[in-house]
Length: 524
Ligand code: GLU
Image 1: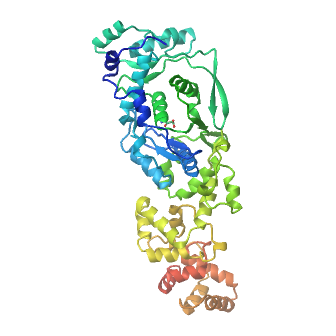
Image 2 (image 1 turned 135 degrees about the vertical axis):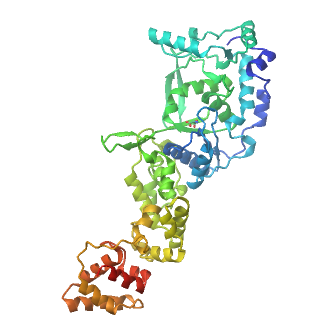
Image 3 (image 1 turned 120 degrees about the vertical axis):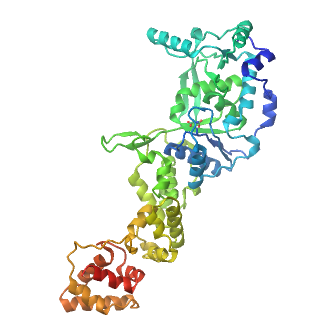
C-alpha cells in the first residue's frame, strides 16, 4: 500500500469528483433477491461489428444456465474501446440474440448495461482505490513506455509496468500536482501487491482450482485518453455490482485470471465463479488438423453467415447446445427431452478444450429439425427467410403462399416417412425450384422415350386418383413393351429435369394439367 490521495487531488486526477462512495454503490446495487442456486450470467460482447460463433456459443451457455435456474441473463455492451467501435455493431448483437432465441431478462435497476454509460461507477471505485493507496496516477508517456519495453526486451525481462519499472508507483503529491499543472492526464494504475514467487489459486467451475504465479503488474484501471476503464477494471466493478454469479468467457482470458482474482480479493469482494470455455475449432480441410475458426478463412465464424444462408437458427442452437452439454443428443434420441431448452445442462460438463464445430454435423441437426416442422411452420420459416435474405428469385417463389404450401406439403403427411432432404431455407427453395416456370430448366440431355410421353399425356387427366394415374402408366408401359418404372422416369425427368424427386403423382398434381402437358411438349 502507498499513501492515499486526498479528495481534491483525486478529483483532479480523475477529471471530476466521484459521484458515489463505495457504501452508496453497495446500497444502490444490493445483492439480488433470487432463490438459492439461481445463476446470474451475462453476455459481454465488445461491439466490433460482427458476432463470432464463439460469442453465440458462450451466450447460449449463459442464457441456458440462467433460464434453467430461474436466474438472470444480462446483455452488457463492452463499448470502452472507442477506437475499435463500429457503427451498427450493437444492433447486430441484439438482432443475433433475438434471431437465435436467446432472451435476456435483465432489469434496469442493475444497469446501465452499456459500459460507456457507467463511468460514474468506475470513477467512484477508482477514487476509493486512490484514497486507500491501492491505485495511483501514472504519467508515463507512450515514448517512455516504449523505452521501458525496449530495455526489458534487451535484458530479457518480462515486459510491462511492474516493480522498479513502475516509475510513478510511489509518486508524491507534489509531483502529481506538477504533472497535472502541466496539463497531463494520467492513467490510473493498480498498485499491485502481487509477488510472482508466490502462487495464487483461482477457481474455475469446470477446470477446478488452477494455480498461477501472482501478478505483479500495475495494470491500467482507467485509461488516460478517454478516462474509460480497461476490461480488467470494468469486469471487476460490473460483475460485482451487477451481482454476476457466473462469468462464462473464452479461455483466452485464463492468462488474466490471477489478476482478476487478486483484484476481487483486494476489494474484499467474493469473485464470481468462472467458466472458461473452449474456443470453437474446426478440422482444416487442407491439413486435416484441428484449428480455431478463423474470421478470415471460415465464413461460419460469423454468426451472420447462418442467418444469411438460411440455416434454421434452432438447429444451430441445438448443435451448439450439444457441444456444451454432450449428453443432450442421447436424451433427445431417447425421447426424454424435445429441445435443448428442456435439457438440464451441467456446468461441470462443459468442455474445457477442443470444442469442434462441423458443418456436416450441423446438416444432420438441421435436417432432423426441419423434419419435425408442420407444413405451416415450414412455409413460414421459408417465407420469412426469403423476404429478409433471399434473392429476387426466392422472393418470387414465396409470393404465392398457397402454391408454396402445396409444393412443401408433398410427402409430409406421414410423420414417420418425412423426407429429410431440406437442410436450409435457401437450399429448400433451390431443391423445389422446378415448380416455378421461371426457374425450371427442361432437361434436354436425357434420352426420352417420346412415344411413352406422347401416349401417357394423351390419356392423362389431372383429376385421376393415384390408382387411376398408375394404371395409365402401366397401360402405356404395356403398350410399348416397357417397364412402368421406365415410363415414370421419363415423366419425372420431363416434369422436373431431375431423376430424383419426391412423389411423382403428388408433384404432377401440384403442377396441374396444363403444366404437365406443357413440360412434355418442351422435350418432344
Ligand atoms: N468483452 C469481452 C470479450 O468480448 C468479454 C469477456 C467476458 O465475458 O468477460 O471478450
